[in-house]
Picture 1 (spheres, rainbow, N blue to C red):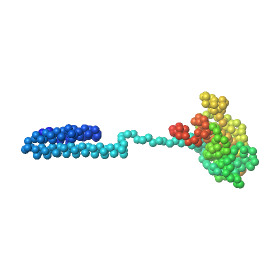
Picture 2 (spheres, rainbow, N blue to C red):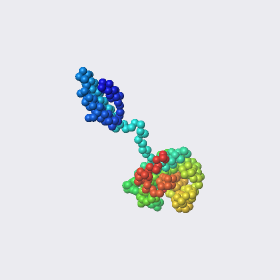
Picture 3 (cartoon, protein in one colour):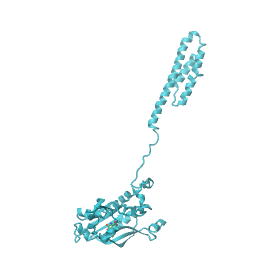
Picture 4 (cartoon, rainbow, N blue to C red):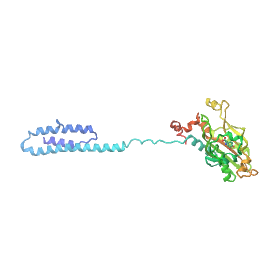
Length: 339
Ligand code: DAH
């Protein structure tokens, strides 16, 4: 019996687990109502009186060791468990951090800025709330000029007229007032028009205005710049200029790019012609230069203006302009890979 107790003692001391079921099995094995220690205590009755003291002591020691062992294992289990709650499985891969994305309008705006900054254009901005002079009068659109009706205006105040700018051409005037030629600048920004909202038109949208003023700037310079832009921006190298009218340029033109007729979408967006209109342009009207204190006898220049939404719709095949303003995450998420 003495040897048995020593063997059990060694067994108990050597036992280890981090599993609550094994601890329970171990408890039943030694301390259960039919367990080893109960049996040993039963056998103890038959022990010779001379050995009773010694064996009784080692039996007690065995029982205490088993009880302590179980308590110790349980305690370990609890602390390991609580660490798990705090840290989880430290070998697990980390939580994925959701990446945001730029808005398609910003992506396209930055691309356009990038293309023009490579040929020396700086970026300039002006206020969205504008006065009549910078939005209309200085741009050769005096009061009662019929072309004012081309752009339905949100007026904010009367006398003096304050309004939400209808185009970024207002920044041309501000830039010329504050800078001497040579001038090479593009002006991106938000513009506002009192128009019914539809798939193709919105009351808020974005434009980029371009302005180049120096001595001897010609229409050929304008055309070459536009060709460079369409090549860089769309990878298309065929453009055409159609005569048009804008009060602030003379002559004026509208720029079409040859988009092609390869896919069904090409047919749809070009209405079967292969050509797409992308902007307005022209040589800055001498009156506009004069209004901004630049001598039209010395300087000439060209200007152009384009809608950013329109370009983004072309590049990303977006069918409805309203999608830009709905902030639908399913739409925006598609631009994650383009920065
Ligand atoms: N401001 C014109 C618009 O909003 C666009 C435009 C046309 C700008 C011709 C220009 C230009 O600078 O030369 O429709």
